[in-house]
Amino acid sequence: MLNLLSILVLLGLLVAIFFIIQLMLSAILDLISILDLPSISNETWWNNNVTVVEDLIQRKFPIEEERIFTGKYISHWEIPRFELMSSVNCQLDIPFEGGWDWLVEGLNNPMTRSDYTGTFDLSFRGKMLERGCFGHMCTCSHRIEVIEILSVMPS
Image (cartoon, rainbow, N blue to C red; front, side, top):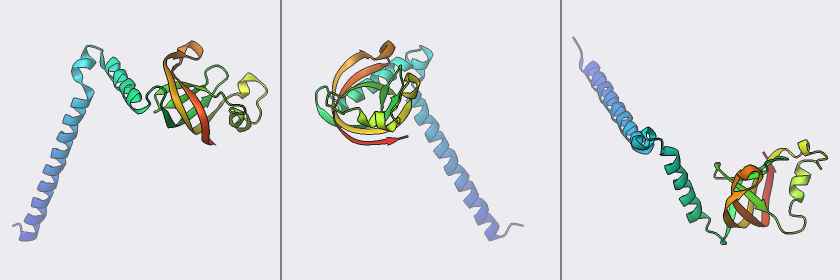
């Protein structure tokens, strides 16, 4: 026979299992709504989500408005770029004298094009100039003017 303690433990386990199942079902339903299954099946999911990212960039970084930008600068002899929000590549324009000194110093004064490889955590004050196709083979979708370098750290 089951004593009272065993019954309470069993009841507690059943409640816990019910709660876990409810959480899992809730998470699955949330995931299904995020995935947008109809757009996956007709192969427009990527286009819809690119639009979402573009809308977010336009709201957060309007053209010609000064902002603080934080991201990764990937130095490469052929395809240099600043990664904004980890999925948007930007070309940096640094018009002031000595603006690229941090890169040359961080790469230990590179002598050959293969020496121009490195990754930096970069924060700067700047403004989004335009949206379009920039850099080697249009790798960058935005062009940003750097007004002031705030911090640079090799990654």
